[in-house]
Image (tube, rainbow, N blue to C red; front, side):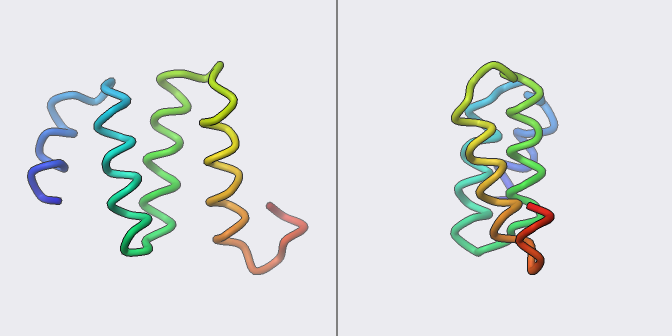
Length: 69
C-alpha cells in the first residue's frame, strides 16, 4: 500500500494507479479514500460511464441518508 502511494505521487495522471488504490481501499473498506480515488479517475477520463457508476456506488455506500446519494 505504501509503495502504491509513493508511486501515486509520481504518476498522478495514471488511471491504473488510481484504480489499484481504489481496489485496495475498498478491500479495507475505507470509503472516503476510495471515493477520492474514483474522483481522480473521473477527472482523468470523464466520458467513461463506468467511472460515474463506481463513484455513485461509493457515495451511496457512504451515506446514511440515501436521498443525498
